[in-house]
Length: 93
Image (cartoon, rainbow, N blue to C red; front, top):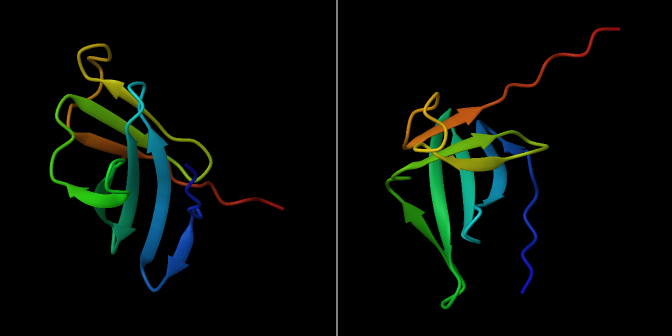
């Protein structure tokens, strides 16, 4: 099974940030709209994206070039049920 999703698809304050796979094999799509995140989990059996209201113990780190998740129990410096976004730096020169 394969899925093709473009990263950084910008349209009027709309940005699909990234596709993220957890260590347990779950797939999530993080979407930003007017700086408000929406998270969708993939239901593999029905092959549909379902909006997720809570990440539970998970912490997501999202960027256009790399994303990953950690358990808050294993990474106490982070806050559970949160997404950390990396902002791009502007090029100089």
